[in-house]
Image (cartoon, rainbow, N blue to C red; front, top):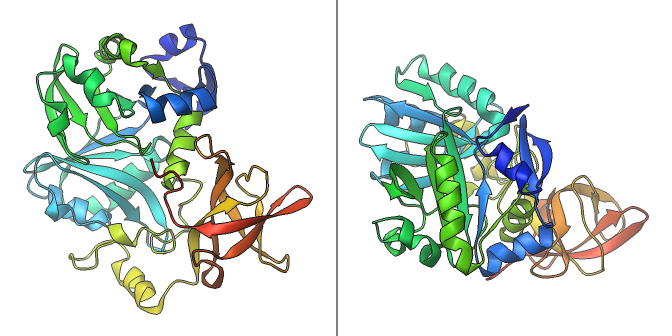
Length: 362
């Protein structure tokens, strides 16, 4: 079991540690609901150093990134980030990721922890005919997510750059917490604003301590992976392994907006283009329970007559809304907003309505 550079700190804080993607990670400190509300109302800090980082360098860097990802990385300028996915050859998704343009011929790819090896092998295979320089720096770097509406105000004292000027999905390389060069990125997977900080493993303890000190008067707390999951689900953000995987098409998953057919060839472009032309037969939908209950991954989704038409891919009791919410794939005929479906929870088939995302409007 791998550990992050902050493992002993999480243990000393009383975090409940669980195995996740090969790492021992903090799932919660004081409870999911309290941590969730801290991020929605103030700010929290997550250790997400298990994520993977690849550097793609050189004159062929853009060509490789364009080949293996669905979005159009040619539109990126230095200091911009982009959400994207890597399609596989059979219509599914290898992984979703964030692409950072660090320099003119250098891209940082941030991938899911559980997919580091798979992603690296996939990109390497396509690089054989291209020849870009590739470095897997996952084991050398740490990542902290400082999320919440008070993040800008609370963290401003730690850097010389104006944090309010860093717009959503842009980043700077600057001083932070007395470390001269870190990536300060206005990204995150909570829907409540904030930053993600990339630094070397040897620097992250200092960053963590200074972040907590600077945020103390603003109510900052450490946050675990359980609240990260409820926060992202309230926004309808896909989680790899739940809502998207090697068998789900980006078009089925509602990720057509990051699948750009106007760029040159990318993996499985032709088949996905055909799918767009013909239309998908199923779609990932969001639903809210009308009855009291908690939908969980794997629970059957039923039509009005009680026939199983799909399964819940992600579900929870929304801490912000106080109702059961979830995502799942259903046939296109049941996917329209306002459609009535049922969720089988043990012996009960509970009424639910297909809704437009996000669940949480802020």
